[in-house]
Length: 377
Image (tube, rainbow, N blue to C red):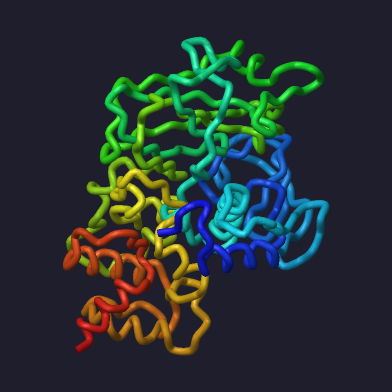
């Protein structure tokens, strides 16, 4: 797994990827996501403007403003990133998160379960109290700071017998964000107190945090939104924060025990709902060795194109997967064309024989490829 402040081939590849990609300045969304009025988003290949708050694909309304392409240089709506550090740094990691969110919105392939949202940055001179966040000495505490999004669940894994405290703030350059001379965090806490204290935190039993928002004013400053996680100063646990709810993957390890010839679910479930189904146990939530890792090893397989997914463009690669899986009821699929039923079969069949499999998303990674090779032989 990638460590922070280290110089690796993986880190160098990611820096090159970010330099050659123009990542949108707006949040990227899928059907099923909440969007907020008077806010711009990227949806598929378009920039949209929300005219009524709601769930995309249900009660939300929007209008299309323009096309978007990550390969086009348009600095009004996107930016690339050039790292000047010789090691894998926090800003590079945060930019990678934005790139992965774009890929999720564009392709429907969600790699965020393999990405730690915590960029190994700690806040100084702040302390979380019952009423909010104060500027004061925090020598008795350690405070991790994590860039987050409104209306997204976050799975937080930390070992701390003395508990942890969670509190969001609007942070600009390590300090309070001021808007028109006023402290935005202070104003936010006057409207509603978001401090959450957890009496005891177990790494293997992560907790969930989500910050709901429908106010266009606060949505405008989302890029400054930061979750502070306060823990005792002597806490030496690994810290993992994943975007999504992965607190109960055991219950979702096997979607079905029988493969059925039923295609209806492919069209009734959104891409977001499918991605929530196809997630095995995750390596980031199993690795507590006092180090903080940036991402799981399998993320690099997806980034360099060493997996077979719905985006596969090598002739007959998908056909080889279809033939190798050897399922009797697998008759309705078009030859050499990916569909969600194939994803379901791969996910179920692999985890039936490998119930402890990690980072399985229903695509063909190195572990699934070895499984198919043994099955075919």
